Length: 209
Ligand SMILES: Nc1ncnc2c1ncn2[C@@H]1O[C@H](COP(=O)(O)OP(=O)(O)OP(=O)(O)O)[C@@H](O)[C@H]1O
Ligand SMILES: [Mg+2]
Image: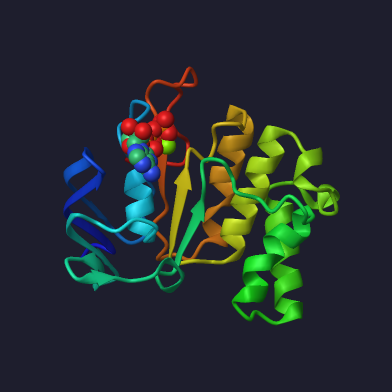
């Protein structure tokens, strides 16, 4: 059985139909990349999966449970999905460590466990020494790594990465891929997007298909 089953979904913004009868099944533990030119709907697909958009038609099931369907829309915070947004969406007034810890605090993770997870994921993305910096004082790739760390710290059952490696060099991206499995639960099926129009057209090192 698929862990994620997207069946014939439609999504429009006003008169513009962005997703038309999109279907995709992702098995537990799979790394899948969604490719397509700019504006084709990759981010929209991830937003529908994460629950930030309501569908106009079709169904999304995760782990056998329906999260989006006609008359049903489970709120994002109840889907168990971690998201790294295309623009990172970091809190500008918080340090790197506070950005990573914030979601854990809201989720009620005790301080000791919280601190241990923050330090583990910051080591993973090699940002330990910059834990006290604000996002404004980081490079684009470093900001992206904060967003990745924040997402991984939540240990969600599904991880969605919207162009997660766009600002990372190939070596850094490949290293992250190699080291990411231990930090994500075995059942987690990460799903990412990449534009085929990008000048960086090397195959995504994080995707299996
Ligand atoms: N809130 C919105 N209201 C109206 N149109 C929108 C909205 N969000 C996205 N769109 C439109 O939907 C289409 C798909 O956008 P989307 O962001 O999903 O593309 P994308 O494939 O992620 O592109 P990129 O590779 O540039 O990130 C685009 O034409 C975009 O202008
Ligand atoms: Mg996009």
